[in-house]
Length: 341
Image: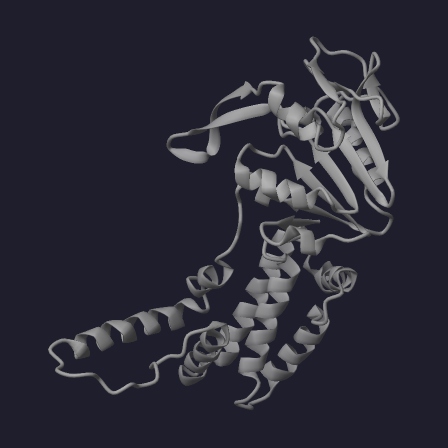
């Protein structure tokens, strides 16, 4: 599973299920949807709620209200211009091939062109459309997947809740066999266009960034009171991604702590990748095999096993060379595995 905050369309193919969950309103979102809806396999989850953020912490919801049916209808009609939505009341029984979820006041669709896979009295909760080589799945009510609803139905203490079983079966049926799932976040406004600058403000590149900032301040200080055009000099520290890595590595070598710090950086990178991929951090013996399986599925060239082997050899030797190449490969491996999410 990948959470995408940039160039989502480039990350999906025939073996990928693209999840477009509750698109927000706005011209930018509409333009993104025009492109993303052309993916080979799409699961479209219609919006139902609008939340206002808590003033002290925008990650929390202060209050939540239902959206007008106009918005989810607009989203659904990108797939089927004849579709219509209705609100039901109570907790009606759902006839489904995926199980029997529990829903309160569900949002349902009438669309004769769709193949109904889960329905309530002639209106469907899950429908699918086949357009040549493209398959589009539509879930009209997001409450089955939302945090407050996924544990509803049945008795979770005796196993998985009915809504969770339903959600799992839905994804298994929608996802191409042997494929992967990409959750798009660009339709929620989370567009990551500054990954390099954020990396420059985090260890281990933060040291090089601070040195570059100090050099810039000293340059301004030296330029005060100068008469005439200064002689053009090359920057004290070159800018750019590779320069950040090179300068940071040189600092580690000069400090005489390259082995210890590089080893810590490698281990911390593995922990960050495990968390990003939702791999249990308490089961580290299984990490190498799981990392390499995921890398092979994504077609990545760099493998955890290869870096670990080189790291072991480097830690045992006394050679000065090799630190820079290892730092670069560790960073590129972590970036590729987390996929910018």
